Length: 229
Length: 229
DNA sequence: CCAAAAGTGTTGTTAGTACACCCATGG
DNA sequence: CCATGGGTGTACTAACAACACTTTTGG
Image (cartoon, rainbow over all chains, first blue to last red; front, side, top):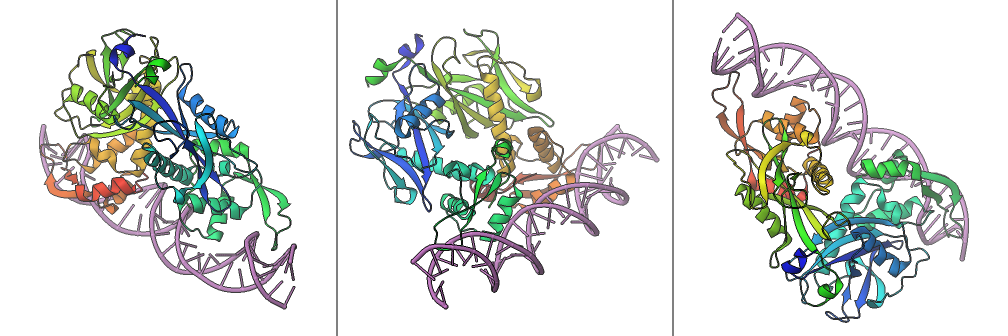
């Protein structure tokens, strides 16, 4: 392949906005950069795309390096290619977001990071490169998706209560929701299963536990069940 | 910028699905390729991204070369980066669609094309590279956008009738719509202006002409007025 | 028995859907 | 006067929004 040489020198990267949820807040996994440029600044985890690697694979690799997780909800959002976005040359980056269940999850700083941490979206101020814009774009996309597809379950543990589900929606959408209307709507869709189990050891009436019903879920994600809340 | 050299040889391109509408059908502008690979096959118009060119600029350039048009509705849709998608090397392509009003428009075959033509979407069978998949993805995106944003006007001439608008929605969404309900919905949104003008020279009762009201339109596009039809 | 969160129905309002006839023009 | 598409209203149904009290548990 000669024409890229003749053309110009450039690179592709993938940046991944990894969302997690912890009972009340929506969080993003950030790394502290260990390399120039922007050493010591917080940034989104990302990597150059390998020669024999599809874009989705690359996003999955980043996710696995940091969290050990595979087969997680992953969505390509937008490609950022402003000429000056990388101070050292032309780097076009494809942004993805992923949704992970953070229960029992200990992220580890991979090779390209000095440090790693979950940060509440409302606490993120500035990030390296144009990563703040990338994060904002991915958040907006997540909000849109959540309104029309039942992907919220991806952020929750296997067993969850309806209140947890509602808090998740409230955290992502940044709104308050009516408890009764929320439950009415959720139960009308057929995607959750009542496990006939209850919370234990809580100082109040224990909540029923639910899991989501994969059978209905798949088609609901495809066909975009309206989940306007 | 050294690391791209050390890394691997690759190129970025942009492919543009240019949609037009001609009273009854949704069309896409296709070119007949004048270069290897796939010489003589029909393909989407596309180009390599120039060193000092943003992605959106690149998509605009393709559009201007072929149609002479500028300041047209243009939307980035998805980036395709399968390792084997280009037989001569690694080329990652960013797909855009644009919406153009085809009245008084004569597209010209630019340098990279031997021939150019509007093709009805239902008549497109196979295309070079993975362009059929790209086209299908962009069509799906257009359909989604059209349901929630009033972007259909971009495909129509300045003055249009409500029946033309309805036929456009039917062509894009591939459904039939009820005339009275359609009109009710359109008039509830504040984005079109009655010009108090009528069609001339038609062998039936002449239809009123409308144009869209840019003042309301801008915010409706931003905020995503529900235009579910 | 107190604190804390779980759970549960009804009513009014709004948007959606289905449907059929008369009107204005050119030929 | 005929053919063609333009234009209009109503009744039924389904979804949405607002709202307050009783239940179950741990401490």
